[in-house]
Structure formats: structure tokens, C-alpha cells
Image (cartoon, rainbow, N blue to C red; front, side, top):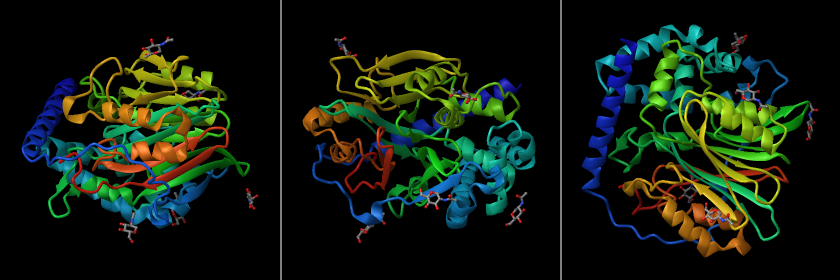
Length: 393
Ligand SMILES: *[C@@H]1O[C@H](CO)[C@@H](O)[C@H](O)[C@H]1NC(C)=O
Ligand SMILES: *[C@@H]1O[C@H](CO)[C@@H](O)[C@H](O)[C@H]1NC(C)=O
Ligand SMILES: *[C@@H]1O[C@H](CO)[C@@H](O)[C@H](O)[C@H]1NC(C)=O
Ligand SMILES: *[C@@H]1O[C@H](CO)[C@@H](O)[C@H](O)[C@H]1NC(C)=O
Ligand SMILES: *[C@@H]1O[C@H](CO)[C@@H](O)[C@H](O)[C@H]1NC(C)=O
């Protein structure tokens, strides 16, 4: 019975996705692929503020300051998410009701339950909706991640975070509504214990998992969505309905940043821990050649692809590296082209920012570009927006 609901929902979602694609495809505007240069640094109003989250505080109190500034934006986003879910029809209304009335039951199985309670308290949202808000990020992140090595062997790790495909097209502003709302919630977090940085990461405020993070002097990590019919939706819905055997991706990455003390230890944890949904983990270390793309199924990795002696960078979007990307969404080929135009000599924060600002690596769904350097523990994040004409449609 449960199984049947899940499959039906997946089919609904795929069907609506398909309709969305075909209806907009008829209006794809032409845009020229061009490798950008000299765009760094952008004007300072595109930069992202950093907040300290003190891990020595009880979970309920850790996010108070962030919530004071970003609470209204979270409420706004959540109302849009719910509308999106409702648009799928009656069946989904039941899920929303279930979520609203079972918050405590769901949250008690999660590693950051107290933090979610604190966020619910600070924003006035039902606890179940805070859980739900967190689930959403596990499903809709399209991205490009790059680990690159300069001529001296120093490693840089950068990513674009693209979010919101199919989540609502705002006809008035010609941009994806949720993507636009998300840009206003981005924050850098410096997680500290004993007033010392444990790791730094980029968050959509209120999302407690980590999609982009650096553990200074140890490793850098990004997560990209991997689509698979047995994957995301199924796992998340099973979890909501009570099967709590798999880890959420964003919590696995956060706990790995907290608890792994080496590149190898992180790699092992990201390769073997059972998860709710498939994913790509892009992991960078501190030594030349330490750059890997871990392709995950729910149970464990199906492939671990690492830099070899003839590679100076490794790059992942949202498709298995041994397969061609979806023809509509090939950000991989342009990204390779721009990396090769850049050359290893020019690998730097500025150089990689240019690559990630080149269309269609940069697209209408891009919310931010984050740039990390592991040795110094550097993390900087810039809001991104793509000027017309820009993919997708
Ligand atoms: C920064 O300022 C420029 C011009 O003043 C404006 O066009 C742009 O939208 C601003 N960026 C953000 C992220 O608000
Ligand atoms: C909720 O927040 C208020 C302050 O806004 C605080 O006094 C109260 O202790 C908090 N409750 C919990 C359970 O954290
Ligand atoms: C934490 O460290 C910063 C400098 O890194 C210092 O300015 C601040 O006073 C310290 N805070 C506490 C509570 O020790
Ligand atoms: C590995 O991941 C699990 C699940 O998120 C976490 O509990 C554990 O602390 C992690 N261990 C290391 C060494 O990172
Ligand atoms: C390195 O990896 C690339 C791509 O995976 C492959 O084409 C190449 O043959 C490898 N080179 C060496 C020296 O192993």
C-alpha cells in the first residue's frame, strides 16, 4: 500500500517535470557559450555574510542569531514549497497534514532534532514543517563542483549551487521563484567549538545539513544531486512514513565534517554509510592528487573516481561521469572547455570564479558560487544571477 503511494507520486512528479520541460522548450532563447574572464571580484553587495554557530551551546540556542535575521525569508520560502506540493493534487495534501501533525515523532529520530526545535521556536513554524523544509534540499539541488590543483599542487574546491528546477516559474520576473527566494537566505556559517573553527559551510538558513563545507587543513566537501528513480523521492517518503534506517545526505556530510580527521576517513564514511537518496560527493584533500567524486547509491558507492597523475582537476555536475549528461542540461562540456581555457597556471579563486560564472555553467537556477581553499580554511560565497539570455529558458 505504502509502496504504491510512493510509486504513484514519483510518476506524478516525473510527468509534471516532463510537461514542464516540453512546454518551455518551445521557447528556448539562443545564448552564446563563452568562457568568462576578469569577473572577480564581483561588487561587494553580492557577497554573503558569515555567522558563528557555537557548537558548545545546546542545539535549541545555536541558530538564534541567524533566525533573527533570516526567519521571515524562511517562512516565505516554506509557504512556496507547500504551494508547490499542493499543486500536485489531493494526495499530497494528506502528506502535508501528516507532516504538520507528526513533527515530534519525525524529528526525534534525527541527529539535529534540538536544532530543529530551536528553529521552529524562533520562526513560529510547526516543527514538522521545519523537518519538511530540510527534506526539500535533499531533492532539488543541481550543481557543478570542481576540485582543481594549481601548478604548485595547492588545491581549490568550488561549486555552483543550482536549485529550483520545476519549482515554479514566475512569469512576471522571468526567473524561478524559489530560486529567487533562496538567494535571500544564503549564509556562511563558521561552526566553532571552544571558540575554534571546526568547519565552515554555506547554508540556506534553516537547512541544517551541509551541501558545501571546508574543514580547515583537512578536507573540502560538496554534495551534488544524483537522479535515480529508486532514489530521492522514494527514500524521503519512506523516511517520512517511518523507515529511519538511512542517513540524510546533508546530515552525513555535516557529521563527516564534524567527525572525520582526514581525507581518507571522510572518503570512507561518504562511501559506505547508508543513505536516503543517491548523491555525488565531491571530496578534496590537502595533498596533490586528492580529489575524488564518489557516486553514491543508497546502500553504498557504485563508483569512486579520483584524480590521477595526468589530471589537474576533477569536475562533476549531476550525471554519472561514465555516462553522457542529459542533452538538455549539459553543463559538463562547457565547464571542461572553460577549465581548459583557464589552464592549470591560472587556477585560483579568481580563475575558478570565472569558469563558474560562464553560461550555461552559470544558469537561471544558480543561487551561489562558493570557493574554498583547504590549507587556509578559506571559504567565500557570492550570490549569482544570470543575465538574459540565459538557460534554462
Ligand atoms: C548590487 O547592486 C547592483 C547595482 O547597484 C544591482 O544591479 C544588483 O542587483 C545588486 N546585487 C544584489 C545581489 O542585490
Ligand atoms: C522558545 O523561545 C523563547 C524566546 O523566544 C524562549 O524563552 C524559550 O525558552 C524557547 N523554548 C524552547 C523550547 O527552546
Ligand atoms: C573568540 O575568538 C575571537 C577571535 O577569534 C575573539 O575575538 C573572541 O573574543 C572569542 N570569544 C570568546 C567567547 O572567547
Ligand atoms: C560517519 O557518518 C555517520 C553518519 O552520518 C556519523 O554518525 C559519523 O560520526 C561519521 N563518522 C566520521 C568518522 O566521519
Ligand atoms: C587518468 O584518468 C583519465 C580519465 O579518467 C584517463 O583518461 C587517463 O587515461 C588516466 N591517466 C592515467 C595516467 O592513469
